[in-house]
Image (cartoon, rainbow, N blue to C red):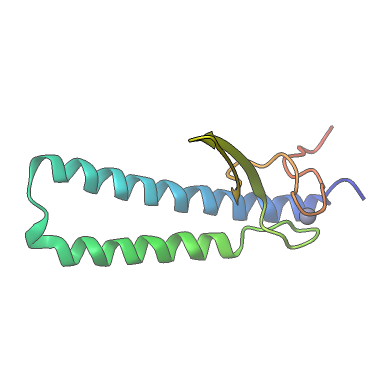
Length: 114
Ligand SMILES: [Zn+2]
């Protein structure tokens, strides 16, 4: 099996959209707080900012929960290589726009052909 069924594709696309929205919310929150900190002191609302970070982290985790390959259940991951300070590090992180599953290799962005 190298392709998802239409139903699986639809489910994955829904989960993927939710995941991207969650990441965007987190980025906007961090960007917004970072920007605000340039102009005003966030100290009086420090507790609110901290609470917000918890909420945003929760949203991202919740979005990630349903974001997995419909065929094998693995969260799509991207391999990241980086070279710095004479050291090569390898890490793997959740892929935002995976072309195929890192677990079973099935095509994830396959659009229905007509
Ligand atoms: Zn898979």
